[in-house]
Image (tube, rainbow, N blue to C red; front, top):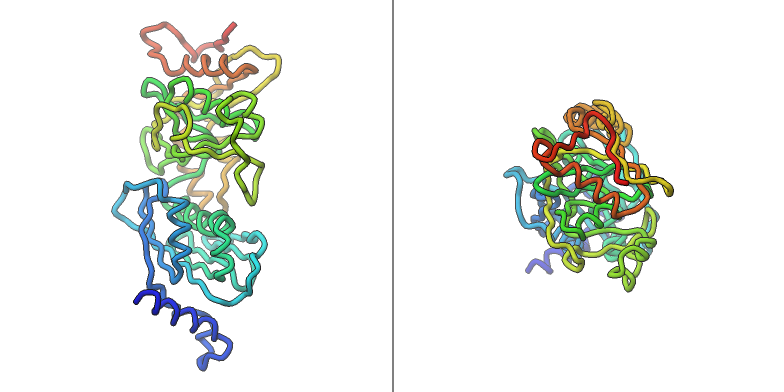
Amino acid sequence: MAEDLIQRVMRGAAKSKTLRRPQDALFCNMELPLRGTFFPLGYPVEILTNDYGVLRAAHESFGHAQFSRTATTLQMRFGVSHEGGDDCPAEPTRREFGHLYSLVADVNNQSLLDLRTCTSFTWLTRATVRNRLYFRLNFLEKVVYLLLGASVVTDLHAACVSKNGKGILIFGDSGAGKSTLAYGCARAGWTYTSDDTSYLLNGSNPPRVIGHAHRARFRPTAKSLFPELECRELTPRLEGKPSIEVPTSDLPIRSTSAEAAVDSIVYLARNSSACARLTPLPRGTATERACQELYSAGEIREKHEKILGCLSEIPTYELEYSDLNDAIQALGLLTRSRESNGISLSDSSQSLV
């Protein structure tokens, strides 16, 4: 029955050039009889569509999470038509004005989002949806995380690991070693939350972050550090640097958690000749730097900048290092009970020599 309805909807879309009413060419009344609820970052998102391929792609992207952080459900609509031929379009162009955001690949493949009301509609061709990787990375996941970022979380270019119940947020420039250090900690018995992207829970006090604890990404050079990656091939990606993506269930990691408290913040400064050294940074450093690295723009950026003020009171350090194991030991200093072991990192730098 559902298949018959979908076929009728698709045939109607394909005949848009000969429709009797001019407004029908807008696809403003496109029927979306299929729906599924998913939990990216633990938040309920209901996807409405007229193509099973959309729901299959959503399961691949978000099927690992099965719990809900809130009763409020975001609705996202993906309408699919036969128009546009069999070719996959180029990467979408992104534009933003105030609270309005667009992703446009071509006339038949585009998304419009209102970041203030968290409403969206995405128009696609069947050829685009059938190219599952392209669709997931360029439309599905972008729309979902843009709306979550506009409403409940703030994106941070940082890894997160924990030990003894104390979470450390690890920042650093591209190539500084965030993912490698986070995984190295996880192999050493720490709890793994994220490798290079963490999501600050808006309004959390003390600050807490969510991460993609179900997978880990590595640069190809990580194979020389971790033998378990030697047989792993590069994961196809449409943007960004080449990477190896592995489910954490396939790795020697004993503990993962999708959420962690932020007790310390560390900025990496890898130096080929340096001993591992932690140096305290001035109050407010984390807020200032995190604001500079925000992905958002317009009024959403203003909102995120206010939210990031909560990081200003978190103890923040620079970690200069060259050896991975020494860096892990240095981070361990931040997870000890400072009252019991006499270690003070607030007055002077600490180094491992």
